[in-house]
Every structure is written in C-alpha cells, then in structure tokens.
Length: 95
Image 1 (tube, one colour):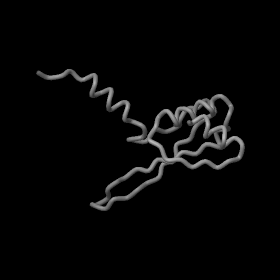
Image 2 (tube, rainbow, N blue to C red; image 1 turned 90 degrees about the vertical axis):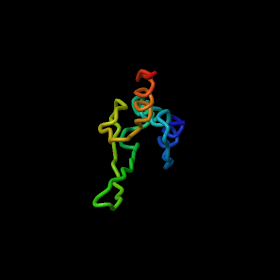
Image 3 (cartoon, helix red, strand yellow; image 1 turned 120 degrees about the horizontal axis):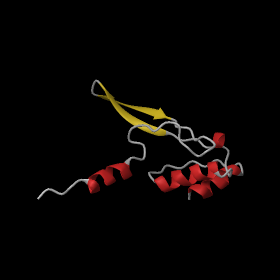
C-alpha cells in the first residue's frame, strides 16, 4: 500500500492518508530509497498529545525521510507498538 501511494504521488497526485501501519510507512520509505519518490515529495506528520498544567495540547512533529529511506527523528510513541509487544513477549512469565 505504501509503494502504491508513493507511485501515485510520483505522478503528481496528492495523497493524504492516516495510518497506524508500519507496513505502509516502510513501503513509502522503501519507495524513496528505490528512487520511485523523491524524499522531498514525502511528508509525515505525527501528532503528540502533551499535558501542560492539566490542559491537553497537541503538537505536530514532522519527521523527514532521507534519500536512503531513513527517518531523521523518531518521536516518542511513533510506531512503537512492535517494541512494546516484543518487550512483553520477551519478559519471563511469573508462576
């Protein structure tokens, strides 16, 4: 799906998608690395919820994909479900 979106974007189609899928993100990163999509044509937004004195605020963080398909910054909570699940699975079960 990520590669399909990247191919559409490389043809000048603006694609806006909301996802929690690392497969979609990885497909876009691989498409950038493969030269299907220039890195400047890929834009990511991650919305971080923060509390300030009991008031919830949302901050938008925009990680960038470089020409090697790597993401330059990895905000807390950004596609971290695999790490959380792996940590749980690797913990010994207490009797």
